[in-house]
Length: 129
Image (cartoon, rainbow, N blue to C red; front, top):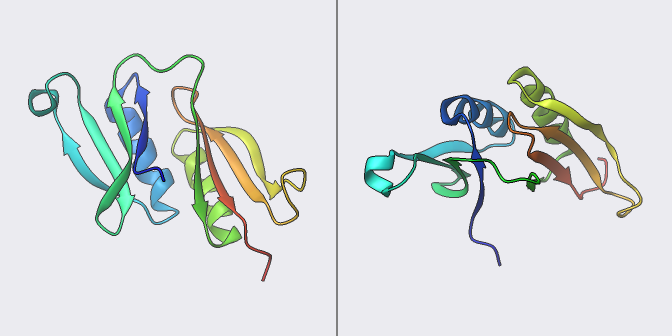
């Protein structure tokens, strides 16, 4: 079981704003921020729900090749909302919301590239209600 994950970003403040907007659409909040002085080497910010950060960003040289992170949601409308808000927050389209039946018949996802080119996804595995 994965406890938490994250990505390295080149512009910490720009990426923090992007993720605050994009992830709010799926119920995530910015739950923790620590400056380099506390961490010892870089600024970090943690996002999550129910008081538990499970997705972190940290300032540095972004991973190359970029990282793919998928956030599971329980409603296809949240996938659509994530995609729209992420684009408004500065993300770039990497796959409009829709079914990806090659994965399985109910796989509904959307993909955006964050400001550093990381492939960020919202995915729903529930049938259309």
